[in-house]
Length: 155
Image 1 (tube, rainbow, N blue to C red):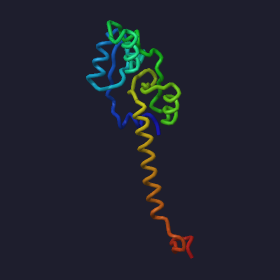
Image 2: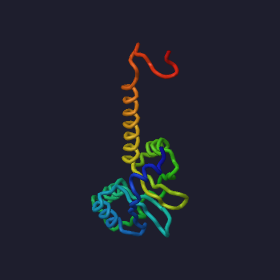
Image 3: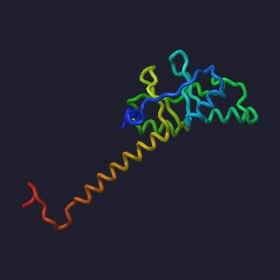
Image 4: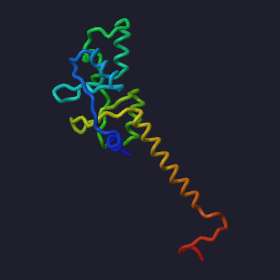
């Protein structure tokens, strides 16, 4: 299974900010949309990611207030990325190693979407559930010991 399979189900809605937007504006957008990340874009290029982690760290560092900081000052300017062709198992490994909860998906330099660790976990669980159902159906149809079989091998 590949990242493109997640994007096909998830859709292509993207939420972005610029690095020079006030952090307070970005945090308000995240709260209003009930999302955990924003892609930071500048001149059509991905330049960073802003997640609730960076927002909380900035608030704590500023004594409990967001203040007048800009997105640029707190964003992750080297986010982990993948392509639509990246295998889900590779994405899962990458996210676990970097403790990343969100990953932009790039096709060359074009932003295709953002996948979350939740999206990856849900995809894996759904695939395992499907496989389990198929195996159980196969086992249910398995002939009992001593039961005659039909077909070319019988007889």
